[in-house]
Image 1 (cartoon, rainbow, N blue to C red):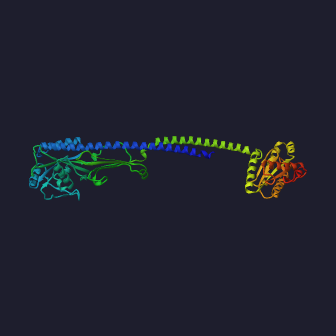
Image 2 (cartoon, rainbow, N blue to C red):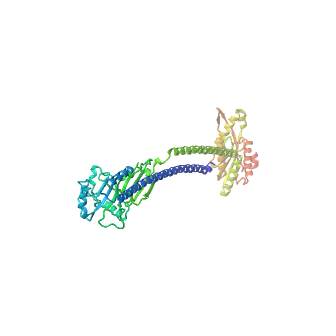
Length: 521
């Protein structure tokens, strides 16, 4: 009966496990969603700040070129220098403002002389090797040169940069030529300054207001440029996001390529287990300005800090408490079911067994005898029915009391059971009457032998509570199918044989094979 409820128990625990897993998974999923929203909010905020800064750079450069376009000349550099100072004061992310002037080869001597006469006695046009050696070198012979003619700020140690031919630096030349060709702002790839800082340069051509149509080949060419240190683009990081990694890189390069990175930031690495268990969030978006084709890539490898362990601990406590109640209910229910099954088994046992001796009672005896007769009929064998009655048992009860009498009956039952096979049936019909069903006997002598063995066992003294008791037993037998094939008649024959022994002075058992006169003689 208890086994029948195992499926229910497993279903209850399965439901608990599903509920606990669902709640825990929902909590973890909610924590991960919160972490994702926080990451997206942070990445969008970072994007907006960086985009605003680079757009401000472009606006500043447009203002400078407009100012130069209105001036139309650099003969007096004081106005543009003052303007550049004001701009840098409002935009500290700009490391340097420069003006590049195109000079034709034929005008080069006059140009250098003019610059030296204007207060730069050491002015000279030179080239610089950014790609190899990072050293100054003499200029090559070519149609046009594009030296830096104005810098703001210009500390003493930076005066040597004046006269640097921007056309001699490949990355500068590409950006400057593209800017002049399309007449809009173009940014270079990131590079290292002489001081070692990462930076990039923005170029924009100056178009004088009086210009109409295409410019002549000898016409002065001006470019304004901004030197932007890449770290200045980086805003305040604000919130601490464990496992955060982001970079700002030029669109001409793949992500994580060092040559193309303007900014690279990485915070708190993750363990291999966290990398395996938790997702990696990714945000990639190109800045809106076309002049600075930069892409912001932000990644966050989530880990244990993304989880709300207090909430998980509360869920664990609640689910364990629920498990405790469930376990208590199951154990209580199982215990009640066991008790009920034991009670039912006990009642069923008492309904078919003698309460004192534990032997089969009359109901079970009749059932077993009927089945034994059916088996004997199918197998064409015999069975013997032995009726036993204890002589002088009433005297034992009267003399020593019912307690001793009950003990005597128990010992008698044990002795009878010890004389027969396990497959045979021993039953108690009433107070001192016992029956034995012996199956699969081949001859009458087998039944007689069993009766003699039982008789010899029972006439031995009984020692109970310090008393020695001796009793006699009367045994009558009947053989199926020799004596009868009817169950009631077979019982009556064995009973009559037992009473015949009791009424005679013989101590040996009698068989139903004797005539009625012999049984009653």
